[in-house]
Image (cartoon, rainbow, N blue to C red; front, side):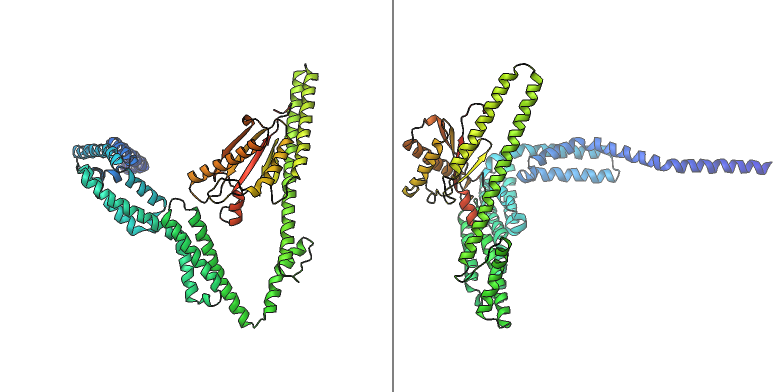
Length: 498
């Protein structure tokens, strides 16, 4: 009996121990969450003040106050982790909060006092100066930090002096970063070319690469804020450097293989022969590469024109189908006034057919070298690829008058139409300059048409888009040429067209 009693007591304590152990993780988990809640409540005001100060860049603009606040905040964190007295922790957090707020307030004066250096710092950061010009960036950042601290101490004169020093170094950091970003790879390639004596085999290509990279660096030094030209030169220079290395390797292989000039020329003819065969063209080289090259280009251009026309026709068919389906649905719902709606639908279809007929008349008025004619919806567009302006100028030269006479004849095919003359540029030059130039060129064409046609000024407008609407790649000379254009948009005024 006594044995059974002892056994029961032991079993009771064992069970109790198991229950305690089972509950222990939950208890610890709950305690951990409770501790986190306590910390969040305790640190909340200081955290809010710190985040607000950071949002105002107080760590940069008011480093003295911000750093002191951060120091007290971290001391409070360490004390909390060590389980020290909460009153002491609250005191440090309150002090941190006060100085975070002082730092936030100080940013207002810093932004007014340092506008130019802040702009320089921002530009350097956009150029990735911390990565590509680390030494200059660190030096400028240190100078600026000293300027900000002097401002916090009330030394405005000393702060501005230090800020001026920082601004100059930030600008240097920005320039160096842009150069590294754009030019470093090409300089390395040219060093490889020099080491491998590429100039002995491909001197013209090496020289071109060197000239282009020097032009790129010159552009960066004179106008770092419009990097389109410099980037284009840099990309061309990189290509020519790689091209030179390839040429030198190829020439060495040809010499090692002891190939004759005839072998080299015949090998060069093979790619054009293959291209010609793919379009059922018999390539002939008895007069050099020119004839076959021209025939291939002509084929491609004809194909592009065909694709463009088919695309326009398909878009027109889709639009007609959608309009007719919409009108049919409306007619089915209305029940009344069917005859009137049918009449309107008929007029709309006739008007659209008239636009197509007018388009057919004008699309063959221009040669490919003069203009591309295409449609966008009901609008008809004359893209005057044959009208060019001197660099930076908006005067129409006399030898383009014959082309503009054709434009006048084409416009007359669309009685009472509205006309919009759009000017466009490539990406070379500043955005503001390109916008102004495109506006001036479009207006020059408008004034020419007004002077040579009987047309109400209210029917014709001009607008410049600058470089904002490219139709080709600005990285190539051909692409930039296509982007420098005048588009004349004809909006037909026809009954039944909404």
